[in-house]
Image 1 (tube, rainbow, N blue to C red):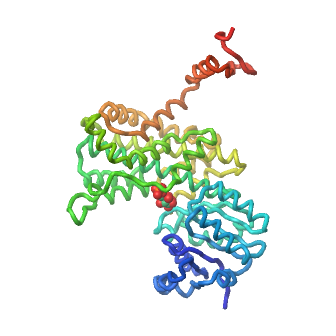
Image 2 (image 1 turned 90 degrees about the vertical axis):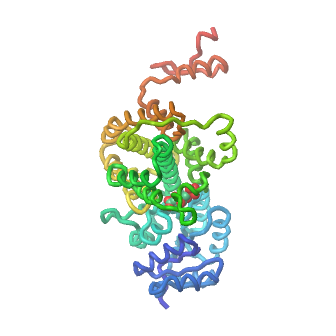
Image 3 (image 1 turned 90 degrees about the horizontal axis):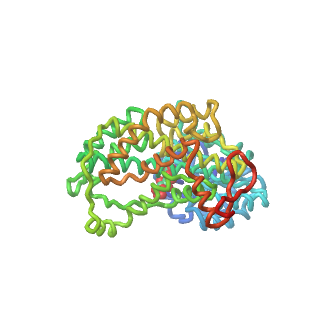
Length: 466
Ligand code: 6PG
């Protein structure tokens, strides 16, 4: 029997969608799953694509069915299950084989696994896959970290199944070991921030402008035809248009206002801080999800502290511009973290390429990413998106709206943590002279920590020590 070009292990939502996508591209795929009873159901679901799919219940048969050097994609829960899987498959592999972790893994674990497997001459790829089930089935965006050898093996397959933006496949080899998983983590961090900004803008229209969900949905749908065009704005517009079939109320009104999180947003914030950075908008978005889950406390606090929110006088155009400013700033924070990590881990990340592969297939795909990729392709300092002339021009157009929205929202008691974090960062960064001089004075005053004097080398102490 002809050997399969790739093995996909793990036929959950994402694994099965990716295997079907590959089969549709004419790629022969060996499939396997821990629960072997899933295999029959999967083959039935595959229909006519089954001719390209070869199920194996035994791990050894699965490994033996692959062309060498082998390529095996694991779509299983990250963490301990991945380590256990590596242990199980390793004796069945040969030098030069590649195994891929396509889950949302912590990039530190990916670096550790890459280094461990390199000693066995097996290549480990950490690959971020974005786009949910529909993306995986019809074209995801994929962020690959690993060796050049693995990329050579993978490129034809991934290029075939990737989302295409005007013909350009949304997949790239971004660097060694953990680079792909790190970029995916930051993608998710930006996803958190964008979702939170959308929620804040929704809240202003709902509670400040007293508009109903259907009409707000119409506004998002309208914005999706302009500079805010993006998958998240599109689905928000659509979701707000639905009614709950049980109560007949708008669907959003019967959903508990407590958001879950699996951890990638939190990782982005933690890594940013470790890198000496601060993704304050992503932090605000992670925090807002945590606060949202304290539903009981909020219900009590509304009685004790008062939950008044005043009516607002804000037009749609002002909200649209404010949202755009906030979106630019959240992407800018995300790219700033990518730059810090690239320097720390010596990845030489290509920011323009990252923006390009986020233009289709992934959850944060948006019109703005096309402008961002152009900005990075032009002569631009490092990963500092706010310094790109085109982005600086967009910011100067939209920041006044962000200020107006924030001033009204904060004065009126509306919660806007991510947008408020955006302006705090923006206003800090645009001051050549800030206020950290007084921080340094305090540190030296109470702890003799010393400070640098402007234009002078060395460590100095203040006159309070004389
Ligand atoms: C994607 C998504 C995907 C997943 C997130 C959701 O890019 O396709 O980001 O990876 O939906 O992990 O994360 P939370 O459950 O933490 O919101």
